[in-house]
Image (cartoon, rainbow, N blue to C red; front, side):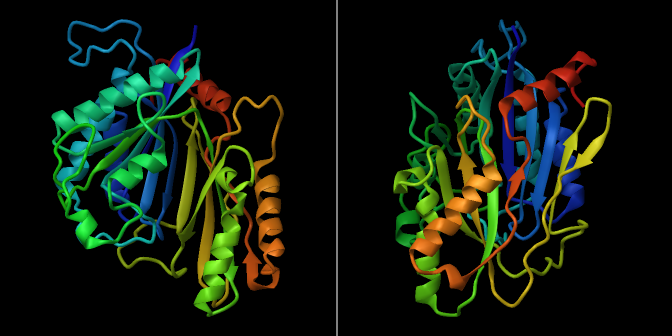
Length: 349
């Protein structure tokens, strides 16, 4: 049996190469395998995809006694979290991507013979450690114990809301304190099957705020809950101006890299950003199409559906389309192969 877990760690930082290098070092300090890293300077947000075997039995030295977790992943996440909370602050953090914490979101995914229950048990171990050992409010998600990712983000009162009165209320966190610390924020942690992350850039050729609202509303017609595509969750992100942040010492606005078992680093191919005076937006989708029994071309299907719903609303001439792109791996099978290749060579990166 090959029982592995994948863990995607999203942090609210993308401008400092030195900070990102330290976070990467801490995340892999317990020999978890780093498979993919992505950063977007405009969103000031980065993600690290890690994987490691699922522990079969607890060890005497293991303080987290649940049998279904990965000590490699847990130890690295805790070490990276402590580093960020010591060296960075959310106060003054500028980004167009919504966020609730420095360690903003941690998603855990089953690989191989692992189950969603295994992934949720590990997510709970992470949430408990962040809350009880590090003193960070943690909001959990994942069936059957908790609600959805959207539910958890709503409970933070900050991801979707800008109402100061609402944000002053005590937090109903699942682990950790009920008080918001403006320096560190909170963390959202959960378990779901692997999903493909797909972004579709677009511009709106109008300065009319009403037209912009109508385009955004029409675009969200790709969502399953709006009668769109099965297994597609989506939101609209403001990609802001297309310039670079003054403190950004990276080489591109967005960059991704895959890490191979032989030490190779393969860059993610990203399309050119649409140019022109119009503000840039992205339709950001989480696509749950794993295990449907047929191959799906995420780019083609979602791009076509987005055009369809916009044109059906009579807004086709108002939108300029960029090229959609998948962020990272498009299947749990590909992640499992990359992870086992690394560990069969003697461990993580």
